[in-house]
Image 1: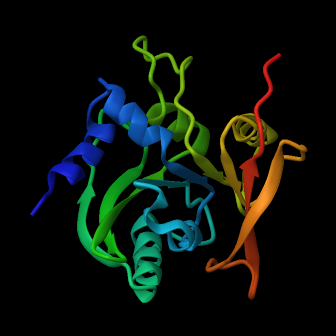
Image 2: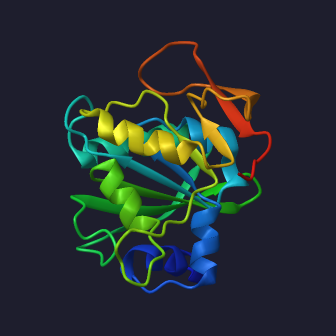
Length: 213
């Protein structure tokens, strides 16, 4: 049975008209670009984030979208996450240029829900579409997520990397490679469950303070 909470998360993709409650969800999300099939952020943070937004083009490496997400889901299930509901979007209003978009709801811990929105698309385009809060829909006004995960990014061009580096300097947390700035410090390290390295850990960087210029 589809819950009201699941419908609310679906609405992030199905309706370009946003209200404060949707902005609040996006403002407390974790966005993982070039994510592959890495479950690490979800395992590490659990219900700290209502929704995890994953994005990858799957141009090489993990193959097609369906095979990749099945592998990711099996990794989450191996860490006691229970798949409750899933929904594959067909030409969603917000992410209508994405090749595939799927939303899942997972039960973790004491029967609490978290949501995973997986987008197969160019990361910059997907980010601009999902975090856009401009009435003119011109991507000039974007909600920033609470945390960006950038571990093992694989961009084909530097412009995309520069785009996200600029965003990472304005979020509260960076999981992976932290900005080279005294404004950030490592607050925790977490086991890595992806494909690239054995016995690796990923650092969580927290912004220590904000400056007004």
